[in-house]
Image 1 (tube, rainbow, N blue to C red):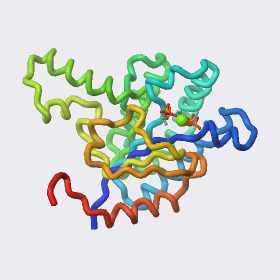
Image 2 (cartoon, rainbow, N blue to C red; image 1 turned 180 degrees about the vertical axis):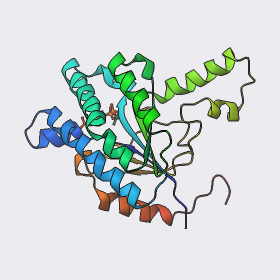
Image 3 (cartoon, rainbow, N blue to C red; image 1 turned 30 degrees about the vertical axis):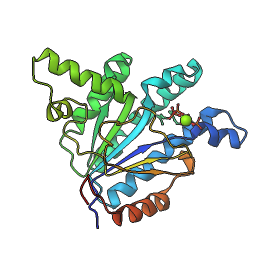
Image 4 (tube, rainbow, N blue to C red; image 1 turned 90 degrees about the horizontal axis):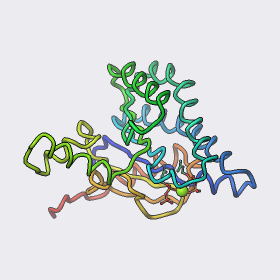
Length: 225
Ligand code: IPE
Ligand code: IPE
Ligand code: MG
């Protein structure tokens, strides 16, 4: 049976979830954000060491300003309201993405969250915010060039935002689409990928539990036989 240390999730389908209920897309984002807590608790219960959540892609700036404004209001609100509880639950939080491009208030909040949770060790919660896998890889190349280092697979990996984090064992995308949308392209080389029809606000413990059971019995080869 496979051991499991890292689950990564593309939380897709908030907008369609709301539209199906004849509600504005923001209604879906609100309930999508609420759903995060349930999945975090489940990962704690299952003693999963790493959970990475794709919260906002660099490419999502193509959306209407009213939607991106609301999403960033939600992210900030989520951190402010839940930080103490997450700390109490011994969760270490790390953000990955083009963070320096975010607004000052959010950068401050991100730094504060990472600092306050740095000694926690039950679950590593990684939030991909303003994230683009291609930019992450490009940035890694540029770091190596700047340091005049020889470009190698190990060095490239070591200069990604995820350098201290094992590659995801399981990568889930909710919302019924089968694409990675610029998420962890390098790190997911050997991840088991699950495309789930359910829209993110409906995705629950049972769905994750079923995926984990399926994962445990997959024969992982990593190129071998
Ligand atoms: C994912 O849900 C959430 C973010 C991108 C922040 P969507 O907003 O993409 O929902 P759909 O895919 O349009 O239903
Ligand atoms: C991926 O979903 C981004 C997040 C879930 C944060 P999108 O809804 O943005 O992906 P595309 O644009 O449909 O590929
Ligand atoms: Mg989408």
